[in-house]
Image 1 (tube, rainbow, N blue to C red):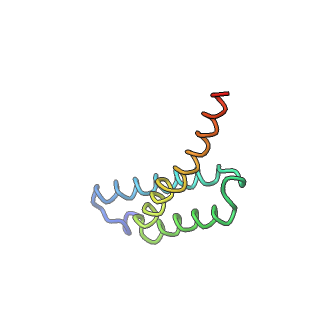
Image 2: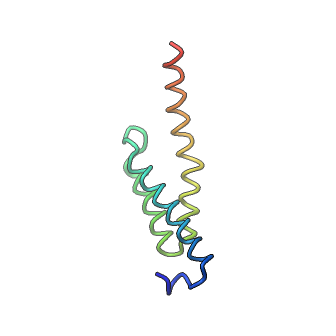
Length: 89
């Protein structure tokens, strides 16, 4: 891995951060119930992020960021709206 990334500390840190983002996204996607996210979408997000990271770490991180900022935020907002509605009753 070091030969592919380079030996500079800054590039190692960037690859480590991108890997953390990809792992965070994969764990979040896997934990989503199928009622929230279809299996085909789970596979697409995971494959895009992991393959993107393996090809060039920053592509995988970009896919993970798109997921974390977009679909994940919307799914969490829907879950929290339901919870607040239940608390008001």
